[in-house]
Image 1 (cartoon, rainbow, N blue to C red):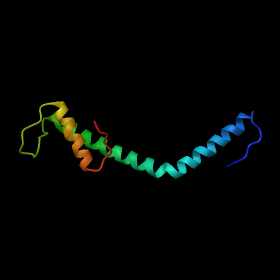
Image 2: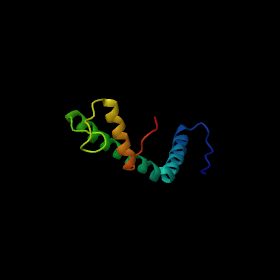
Image 3: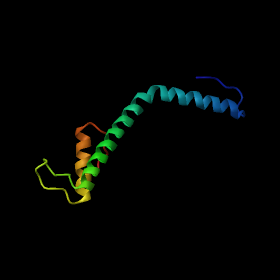
Image 4: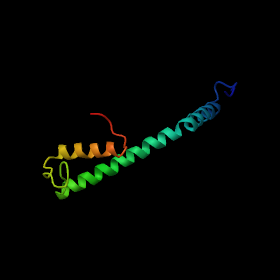
Length: 92
C-alpha cells in the first residue's frame, strides 16, 4: 500500500482511492464482464419471446401447442428459455 503522510490533503486522498479502485477493478473485471454478457443474453431472449407474444405467434410447449394468452405465461417462457441459453436470471 502507498504511504501518504499528509492527512488533510484531499488530492492525496483522491489519488489513494483511485489506486485502490483500479486494483479492485483489475481483479474483478472478468467477473463483471461475464455477468453483463449473461444479462445481455437474457434481455435478447426476453425481447424475442415478448415480440412473439405480441404478434400472437408464441406457443406453449412446441409450435403445435396452444397459443399463449397471458402476459405472465409469456414472461415465464422467456425466463425459462433464457436459463436454458445460459443467461443470468434472478430467482422469483
